[in-house]
Picture 1 (tube, rainbow, N blue to C red):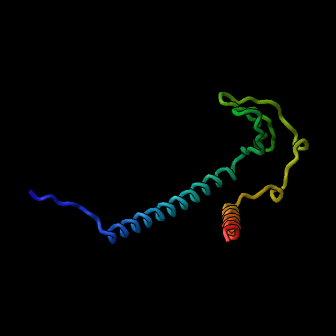
Picture 2 (cartoon, rainbow, N blue to C red; picture 1 turned 30 degrees about the vertical axis):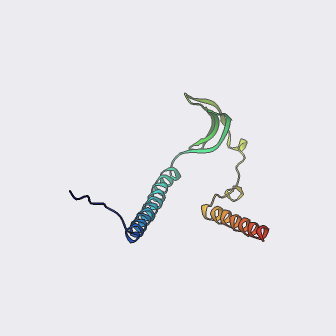
Picture 3 (cartoon, helix red, strand yellow; picture 1 turned 90 degrees about the horizontal axis):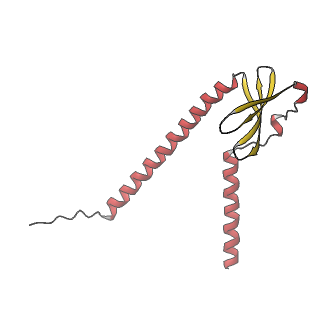
Length: 131
């Protein structure tokens, strides 16, 4: 009776690790481009729509007030888990719109670099404290 053991050498383990790493990177790249494509399609649909949510205000955990624009008219509605209710219609003169330049831009690249910079600064501080 012969018993075969399927042991892996360190070279096989390294190749398997590299293969899994490459597969992981490919999955990340495909996910990135798929998300960009779906986001672009959705943005194109909503950009040309007559329905726009201008602002949302959270009243409680599951209840919101929304200022919406339908065509050239403006409405305030309440949105909850179970229903949506019309509250009032507003004139365009009643609405104060913020310019897009005043709104904070959520740029992932800038946020990522700022987190990396903070981490590097923290590591430098920790290394100086150790010395």
